[in-house]
Image: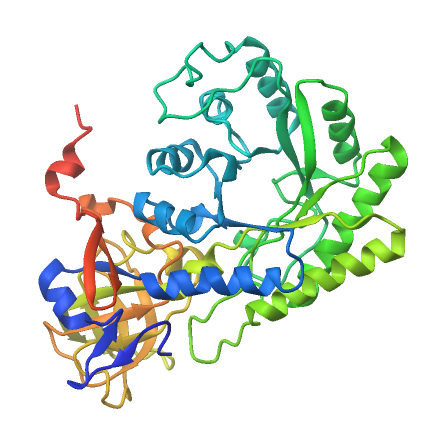
Length: 455
């Protein structure tokens, strides 16, 4: 579980991005999110290479919900990927970071009028439409918004962009619930029959949505979108999603004469959280999607569309670690056969990473200062919040004392983005490390930040 640029340095400590992790903890404090910038950039390039070698017209769009801030937007833009914004806040962050609007997709099961208006005025590459009410609100906004002013700038206070022309068709992707029940945690399955996301096939909503969009001159349907879930290792589930989407596209062509130029299959590829995890390689994932798409197109005599993918977790998860300082070691006289009796209480927990409580997420911990020593002593690691917030129920470490620093691996996705101020704890800082240099990309919050919006 030495991921990305992680290694054991000559002092027997954990090193990441050429930086001694214990020194990072001393310099920036804990808890601390650490981003391995080189690992993230290499993963972006791995995705691009895997798909470019098989299907050059694949659109790779980073799912910003996994983790997003201005620095991350800039890294993703520099690596040539698009960006999936799942909210107005994510969209605003991307625009403030200078991310090219034409490479942004706006997602969300319920987009407010303000979010839709921001996307329209910014000129995003597509809005992924999720329900009929959204179509009507979008059309109303497109009808009522003023055309571009004479200086060609957007009419709001957004960063400099080109405003939409009043008579232009706005690009739309239609989100479909593909009836694929992926094998993953129920709370991160999104393509099954009872999903809240997208237009369903069985009740005919997907076809009615196509009719509505094709019949409106203000909208331009650029393809279909689906997403079946997250942390998926079974490649056959992705192949089933491709088949379902191609079948739907072929049926739409027969009914309406519309040939979809793009099928976006979403993301969801699994990553390594514990040593026994063995997720598929990116090149296997790419081969599965491309082969499934081409087989379906041959089956239906359907012209091969461009392919879209939206990796989030699989781009950034393994590039992140979280550093914690142990505040107390407790010897607890319980009789549970599967739990260690020695508890480590650390200076973080559910407020900086709620995934263990939300999903029963599993992680690997290592001792930062004695990384080279055998990790053979069992501990239960818990946070400091006012509830039982286990981080790892059984972590193997060297003998650990109060004041030691431990690292939780594979926290690049959905830790920072799901963090909160529970118990009024300020959120941690984030540093990006690369070639021996560390830079703060998110400042540590203060108690004044916690109080900032109180009245």
